[in-house]
Amino acid sequence: MSPPELADPRSLPPGQRLSSVLRPVNYGRVPHIDLTTWSLRIGGDTHDGGEALSLSWAELMSLPRAVVRADHHCVSRYTTQDLEWSGVAARTIIELAPPADDAQHVLVSAARGYSSCIRFEDLASPRAVFATHLNGEPLTPEHGWPLRLVLPHLYGWKGPKWVGAVDYRRSVERGFWEQRGYHVTGDVWREERYAYQE
Image 1 (cartoon, rainbow, N blue to C red):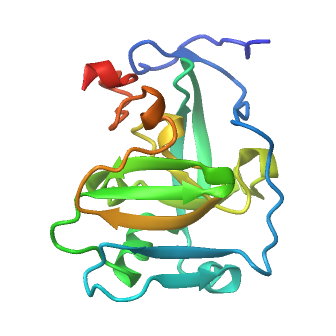
Image 2 (cartoon, helix red, strand yellow):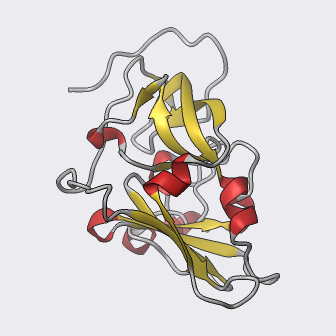
């Protein structure tokens, strides 16, 4: 069943319809994640070329908090407006483990083999956040608990749920949906949905 549509109080990205419901869309089952063994690993083509940085849940939660109010745009053409995402700013993670000077891409990996390729400039956006909370409440497992990457200017599939790793790349490494015909950038305002548009 499709989510209910609402009157459009402000402009939406092209091809999008307004929905009052942020419905979870998952590929496969919602994973069970154990925080005692979970970590966020940042590696790949790093600035110092050393071993990956690994943050436990406690270490992640000790970092400065960030709040971003943003719309969520699903590639299935539904937009939910004015969601409050809170967590750790992506820039904070980048500062802890910066990329090599020539690393222009990022592969963000999540539970169950999911991954998404994004440009480094998108991860470095001041509105990009590794979210732990939605509208003041901890994320539910269906919405990506414990950690979800939110990139408000891109389609939702570009920001994985259940994130576990961030790997800088000097060249594009297509993620799960990009390997299946979706656009490598996914800018919602340019309606970059499919690979044939690249």
